[in-house]
Amino acid sequence: MAIPTLSVWAADANGSDSNATSPPATQDALENAITWLNTYFGGEIFGITIAQFVLAFVAILVGIIFKRILVNYIERKIESFVEKTEAKWDDLLFEAIVKPLNAFIMIAALHVAVFFLVVSLEKFPVEFIGKSFTVCLGIAIIWLVYRLAEVLATYIDELLSLKDDGLRGQFMPMIRKALRIFVVIVGILTVLATIGVNITGLAALMSVGALAFSMGSKDSVANLVGTFNILSDRPYKVGDWITVGGDIDGDVEEIGFRSTKIRMFDKTLMTVPNGTLAAATIKNWSEMPKRRIKMTIGLTYDTTPDQMRKALKAIEEILATDEGVDQDYKLVQFTDFGASSLDVFLYYFSKTTVWKEYLDVRERVNLKIMERMAEIGVETAFPTQTMHLKGDSLKTLKELG
Image 1: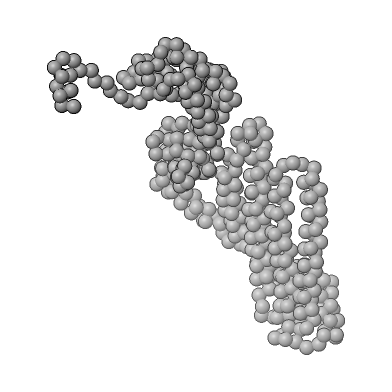
Image 2: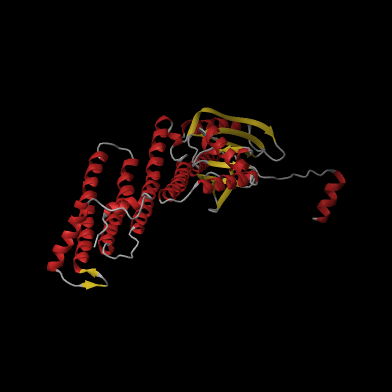
């Protein structure tokens, strides 16, 4: 019986004649090997000889051993390379490669094992093994490149952040998604073309579908344009605290293709279309170099001019000596005779823009002002009214009282 060999498998995978035969030397060698094994392992199970089971087992065993040797070799090479750099992307490289590489080796070993098992079955379509191997190999390669997209996105992110550290993490979600979508689509079309499927019609159908989708989804196009406007103009970046209108106030968590995710201060997640954000007025609190503090202190009308001068000087000293107050610009002025108080206007900045630290500075300054006002002997005012009565009105009030 003529036994088809791996050359038939390769020919069938490429779409050539499935009845092609291997070179006589290769075919004779395989027949002689099986015949030699049959002399030691006689008998058959479902038409498959014990010798073929032995060869299939050996193929899988060789695959497992080769997988272990190759993975260890790659791990050593990558580790020696990673130790020389401080980049993050190369740390992800080994994790991205190992699992797809293991899958590829075991796919090859299993298909060789199956080929040994069915090689003597006359009615078995051996060409199916070649196509199966092509499809499985294609899936393994797609999986590998899909995982490498994360590595490439990290590398591009680190490359961009070398020029501007503010760009770190901004493009990661977009680059990763774009690469993965591209890899999956191109990979599937390539696998289909390799096994003989005509992808011309499929590609044309996808083009028509994409055109129809773009014509019927102007909002999606607007959001995509808004995304590029946001990334080019950079009104905000991931991690910034922004306010949009009167309803959106929180920290930017992610800038995606279609929308931006904002973590509100009540811990809810707001998803806002990028088209909306690109057309809106955005207040970026994180871009403040320092944070303003503006307030008015009302002193009672019992305060004398001398006490007012001492109070103003004391407040100026407090602001000048506090470590959290920015010294570039500050004001302490007696501005108004209010309805129920003598108004002292304070205007200064905290060095920090962090919300909690800013509140700590404001609280510390207020407490110091209270202590100094008590030492000087002046009191802060609250809304009051004084009624002055004369003549008959005063006599009537006294009689009623």
